[in-house]
Image (cartoon, rainbow, N blue to C red):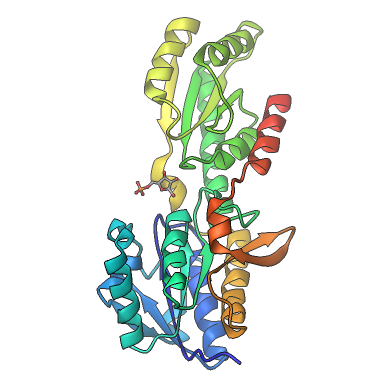
Length: 322
Ligand code: F6P
């Protein structure tokens, strides 16, 4: 039997579409189970500064279809300091919280790991557009960000084709090529550059030139962020191939917007599952979805594991279909 009465929820790190749907599910499921529910503003920063409010069913109305996170989020490097972590747990104990649900990416999971190591029950939900969390096939927000990026690249294709141009388009992903590789398959682009697969400019440029020489009206290269300077790449391609070349950085547009139906359902399922796990006395676990089933695993194992299989097979498919 669980000894939990009051549960806090926070969102941390980069926001992602569907975070609101997750909070709503956590709050409403928790209230249905008889818990008191609390929202923590601005991630671990708000936890440390005791910026915490009680939430009702009404507090989470009209949020399901809204991007971002109504609780606010922040990156809070100070949480690496053990003293700050202990002070944050003390804040929760002082106001009578018994458990915490953290929605965020790998940095946020690290914080959740520390909290559970201090003996405070804590569950993690994967909220990031990067899809770079090993314990799940899909993170909350990835599907929406992918659809946003695909819709932008489709538009670039229209104008590139009209003008007989080359387009170099940078997408997010941090150090994970999932978003780029999925864009490559969904948009049928000529080349995709991801951190997990080595590439050289010579090879990429030769393959683009080959396509143009054999009659293509345009070419699109999708580049995962942190790979290269896309503006410089555009200049080099234009000089080499003789076709006008433009660079586009999609940037934070990919993080906003109405969550897709898939992300809303995923976030809602995961949110409700977090409460189920806390009721069963689980802690230090992170939630995922694998082959459609909700799963949970040790947060430390999840942070340390690599996640390349999906990216690699998607990347390989993009090479065959281009
Ligand atoms: O982790 C999500 C993410 O959007 C990454 O894709 C990107 O590298 C980073 O956050 C951008 O962070 P910021 O919002 O701090 O510029």
